[in-house]
Length: 76
Image (spheres, rainbow, N blue to C red):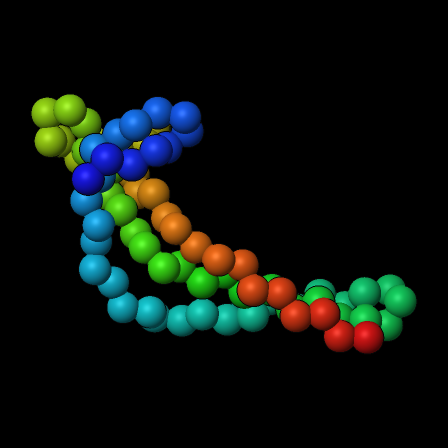
């Protein structure tokens, strides 16, 4: 599949995954309120070069594109 990444179209393949843990981060506001934030991943796509070789980052790790949503709850 073609994926748009950093303004370029690259080759990618969707990777199946299981959710290990999705936790909320909580921030206490100085006005007494609370903000809770959680990122929920919906798709993970491994990136490949034009030869079909997995692309690696500068540290040698594999490159992935992630589709996600950020959920936010605000309480007073």
